[in-house]
Length: 143
Ligand SMILES: [Zn+2]
Image (cartoon, rainbow, N blue to C red):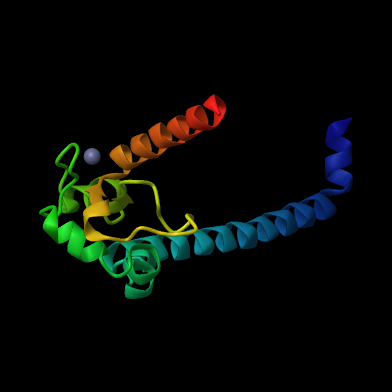
């Protein structure tokens, strides 16, 4: 039964299959190309410094003191002592600088004094930010 359908439409079925495969091939090729480009860009980003370490970013976020703060802290997280180099290897990004009193760029009066800056790894930075958020909520709730 099925056999006769196939033999009757052999040419048609085969050409449909061929068309499907060639379309799929194009799709697959486009996908692979996109993926390769993404990987290339990612590698490029890791090799060259990401834009977040640029002078403009530094000026905007830390009053131009970001790099100075990192150097003062011997290029390592002040909490867990993870080094800048290890940070690059672990997270694929530069070590971060924290505003100790929370007055960063989002604050209406950012406090970019060097003594208000500390070098932190992403993990310790995240922990401090969430601690601060809880603290702020508590304070607001008390009032
Ligand atoms: Zn740390």
